[in-house]
Image 1: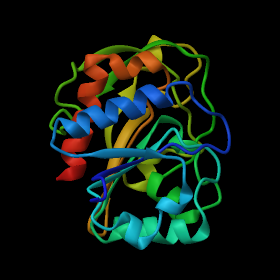
Image 2: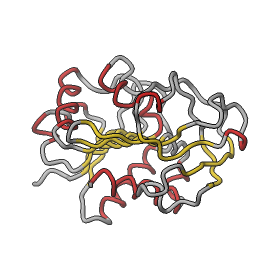
Image 3: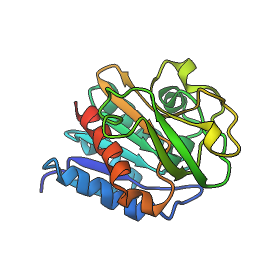
Image 4: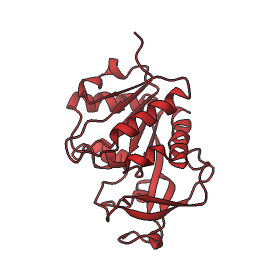
Amino acid sequence: MPTPDVLVYTRTAGYRHDSIPDAAAALAALAAGRGLTAEATEDPAAFTADGLAGRALVVLLSTTGTVLTPDGRTALEAYLRGGGALLAVHAAANAEPDWPFYGDLLGTRFAGHPPLQPGAVLVEDAGHPACAPLPGRWEWTDEWYEYASHPRAAGVRVLLRADETAYEGGTLGDDHPIAWCRTVDAGRFLFTALGHAPEAYRDPLFRAHLDGALTWLLG
């Protein structure tokens, strides 16, 4: 039996989001729309050189805490540097807190969020496929993530920003990145902080954002 094209990893060692089943189903549907197969797993044994070989995409889906073994970390880094693609969604910002490579890849660390509330997303990079389907200012309800350092300082390509005038509790001001991407050697990485609630994954615009992310990641 061939290895599924997309590996959706949902293991949590900290807070576990209720949205994970809806999110995994949405990503499988988006993959199927491209003729790709997807599997969701909680098993860290999926992260080996052989297990990742031939994968079009790996997704860290609201993973929290330490969810990879040392060998799994080595395999994932080699996969990405060798031309793989990695999508990190929402709480994946809070995964692998003591793995330096992942911190460098993300460009920052999760540092909390104000209460779930309505706000607005601002498109910074309208030419990027993950942004192209979105209006320039997008009304949205989510957890508006705060970071331990500013991701832009790490050289990421910022795609979306949070409009801090539209909600309470933001601390980054006018420049509050909420989704970004970068290349790593031959590989591609994209992070979106959005996607807290189960209903997000049934929202056409959010699904279009994720689908555009896949377009870029699969290159």
